Image (tube, rainbow over all chains, first blue to last red; front, side, top):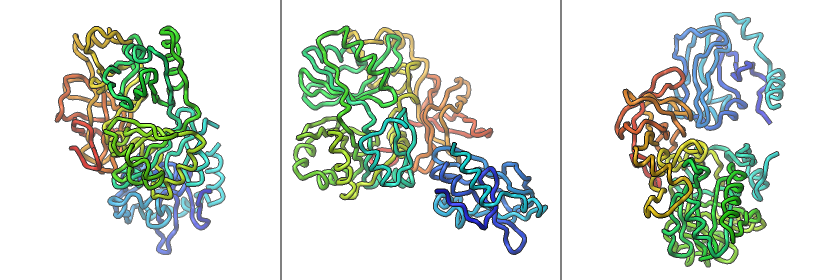
Length: 131
Length: 364
C-alpha cells in the first residue's frame, strides 16, 4: 500500500534522501509520513547556510491533526530550501517525493548517506509500525 | 473491529481512511480533509452520522419527563417538529451529554445523542425514565443518519431524493423537522451551513448515499466535520464540556433555561448557585495571529487573570489561521491578548467572539 521508491534512501524518522550528481542530497518526508499526518497546513524549513546535525530536528511540518519535527538525515550544510512549500504546504501530501521535497544538503561525511536505510529496510520498518 | 454503520462499505468503496471514533469505525477523510471542508463551505457535502444515538421516548408524560431531564426547557417546543438543543446534567450540574430533542407529538419526543457516550446516556435516561414511570425508551438502531450540508445542500437533496421533498422540507424553518414517508428530515446541522440532517431506515441508507453522490454530493469525513463545527462555534462533547464542567462554564448558558424558577431540572441547584456567586470560568474563542496550530490541552496564560486551557484547537481552512476554544478565567475579555506555549515557543493569541465562520464567511 505504501509508496516507497526503490532508488531513494530512508531514515527511521520517515525522511527520504536522494543523492544528486553534484554531491548534494535532497530531503523530504515519505508518503507514509504524510499519510499518517494528513493535510499539511504549515511547513517550517531550515534556511540555506544552516548547519544541521544527524538525527537532530531541523524543521517542522504541521498538519490539521498534528505537528512533527523533521530530522536531519545526515550532518551537513543546507544549500537550498523549497520555498514553494510556505504557500502550498499541501504539495507535501500530493507529491511527497517530487515537488514536495523540503531541502537540499551538502553532507559533511558521505559515509553517513551510505548507511541510511534502503527501500526494502524502510518498507520493513513501516510494516512493523502497523502492528 | 469497532461498530460499523450501514454505510461502512460505501466508505471503503469511496477510498475512506477509517479511524476509531468512540468505538465506531468511521471515515476520517476520503483523501483530503481540507478539500472536504471547502466543499461544504462552497458547495455541499454529506456526512455519515449513523453512529449517533437516535432514541424515541413515548408516553403520556413525555413532556414532563424532559422538563426534568434537560437544562433547556422543552416548553419552548410548541409546534410539532420543532427541535431544541440542550445539555443533560448530573445532579452536580456536570454535562452528561449534549443533544437535540424533537417534539414529534404530545406522546412522542425524539432525541439524538452522541455516539461515544451511548452507554452512559442510555443508563441515565433509562434510570430516570423508570423512576418517572409510564414511558417507553427505544433506541432506534434500525435507523441511519445522513447530514447533507452546504449552500447547495437542499437543492441536491431534492434532485437526488425526489421533488416531492421540496414542499415539505423546503418549508421548514431552521431547527425544525418533518416526516415524509420513511424519511425524517431536519434543518439542523453541525457545520454552520444550510442543509438537512436526514434520519432514515438503515436498509435504505446505502442506496440513498449513492443517489446523493450521483447528484454531486461529496462524502465528508470526521476530520472536516471537526474543523467545520469549530469554525461554526459549536461545542464538542468530551472536549469542550464533560461531567466536570457545567454548561455555564462551557459557552452554553444560552441553552440553560433558569426561568421559570419553579421548573426543577436535574442539576439546577448547582447552576443557580453558580449564577448567584458568579461563574468562575468561561469558554472563549482564540485566534492565533502568527503561524502554527493551537492544539487541545495547551495552556493559555492570561496576563494577570490566571491560566486557562485550550479545549478544541485546530486549523481553520476558511480563515487559513489557527483557531480554538479555551476555558479561561471569567475576568478575561474579548480583545485581550493571551499567550500559548506552542511547542516551546510563546505565541500570542487574541480572545475573540465566536462563531468564527457562518454561511461561508468570516465573522471576525
